[in-house]
Length: 152
Image (cartoon, rainbow, N blue to C red; front, side):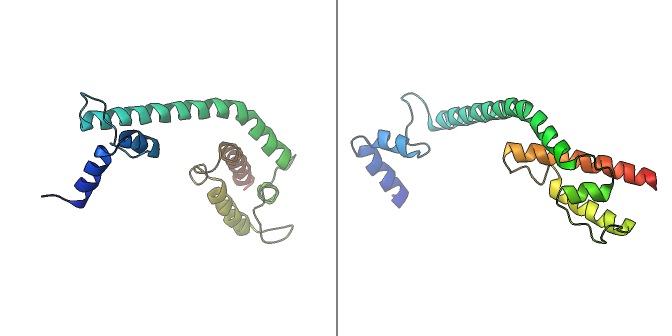
């Protein structure tokens, strides 16, 4: 039984230069080296993709080691000498209701919003620099919260 997809693939294979055109267009499975089954070709492409992904991850790790100190410095400069949790949250752009003397409940609510905003899992799709700044901000928020809890 002949289907439309089989007709198209047969036409593509019969056309002169079709294999090269398909490879340039990025059509998967169009070019199979002689003596290699389609399954082997898929496996080879999958292995190549894993290798490329690993190279990207290693490059990102190298970039992270270069950018992390800059992210830490950026967060330290942003926070300055602020020690209170509400001050840290305000410096990071998280609104804390209650004016200059917010209640403990208001600070806790703002803290939870900040955790959601700066959580590393929430910013995983962002560029590397923003992720690192978010991680450092998250750490600063957690440290300020620990001091807030100690104060009572």
